[in-house]
Length: 348
Image: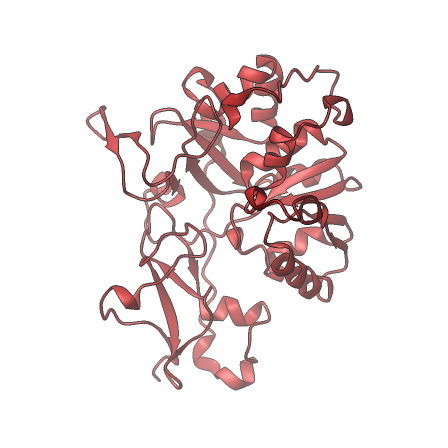
């Protein structure tokens, strides 16, 4: 029996699309419904950047999470044998939680905060150091059950704290032990779970960044943001939430019931970036109907940014770090003083 849903055949650059996870153009292959010739969904497909991104959302996963069709409609050919999920060795994760003098993100935070405090935050959120790029930061994804699911490398500027984009240079490591200029090769983001396992066919299923923290306190409110960096910064200034991150607009497939099931019986507040309120509200409504939880969407950033074109695309960290609001309105944790200078122009 032929498969009803197949990856789109290559017919030139126009047959490759925008990846919903790594945001690279002309790299995403849709799954096509062979009955109609149409894509199943813009999120259903495989990223061609197998090592750097690794995004793969199969039709069977899409339909199981409440996609457009029912199983009766799509027939038995869609339901394959469930692939066993692979997990990463925790010992490698623990080894990476060091070498802070080489970590640009640590340098950015420690420029404003006490080194001991920053190191505690990095350990708490399982943020390591990678040689993938010189000064690179490694964000580990560990689920609520303590299993390490993925490792995401990102490169930041040590002074501004901004992520290195595609038109900017970062020094990339090569096997010879040397670094070379990495430019015009996409934003400096790489998923290296399969590389760590030395198995390009490994099936890795992501979870929220910071999800492991939910197991430490079952009563505290959960704050959800998009960026790993934002979750960490929010945890410093607004500690009354457990902050976790999706890792992208559709990162970790957080809109799927199977991923968001960690919200069960919890009070959860989503903090979408400016411009994403409607999209996240729709996702919240769908999840609320399938998961027993108290799920809210904060309109704070949307309301605050009205009429301010410069705020388009800002996230919670941007508002915290660029705001002129007195530091007295934010509180730190564990008695560590917050010495962040918001008038410092280096962040701009």
